[in-house]
Image (cartoon, rainbow, N blue to C red):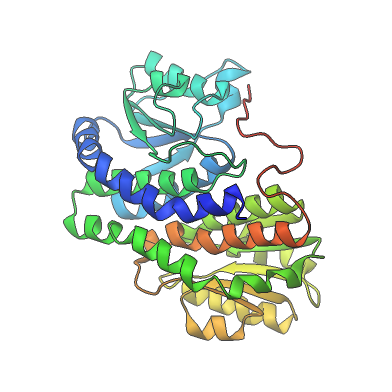
Length: 345
């Protein structure tokens, strides 16, 4: 019998297809309403949603030339010393929309007369009530503790906003291909993901990404930690070179997120360096050269532009974490010490 988490991973193509179908016109209207009313973006989020915000930093920066900052919610909720949000668009991302610290950021933004957007799976949540505009995830109820479909749908919502702000028909057409790309990735990995059992005694690993997939490195590491209790440390490939690479010894597991695009040459160079250090290389990529040399090749389609690869590159990470949890005799639907809705002050 499949776990709930496995079922929800497989629901992701349908969720994003529904999001695109239901919210494209609404997001275009939101973009028209806010365009010209802000100079930069502040995003408030925690956990998985914070990793979606990391994607937005590269997405809106590269595609829309908009500076994106991650909020420091404690300044709003605990210290009661919120910064000046003049000229900001403030976005809150939360699957449940319940966390008081994230809500406090949007509440303060409203008090400062700044436009606010909530990306949430609960349109009746306190976060949604603080927002001028709402982009629903359309993920239905997410029952597994580890977020999967609310993560990818949050990425898709951000991609929709980026497309709408730029009003680029070609990018909308590229985004429309994502449900099929995720479905194909799941199918392609059905056999190779069984080799995850090889890593059941792993105690630690590093997860490396850069650019758009800096977010993917953080989300893969989070899923591994949540589901398996393994210490998985995420890094930018650049930051990893500045010290942490000293931890790599023979057999040290490294998960490298390396889709094609501007970052690929840097990632390929780091791959070679890590191979020379005799690291155990697990590779998420569409590059056949890297995949052929990997101890565990996790292939994604090669048809996507780099700006959309995070929506697909996370799928191998989700499946790896799920299957590793099963190999270690753990319940992937109810990880120890966690609950579905986490409310932080």
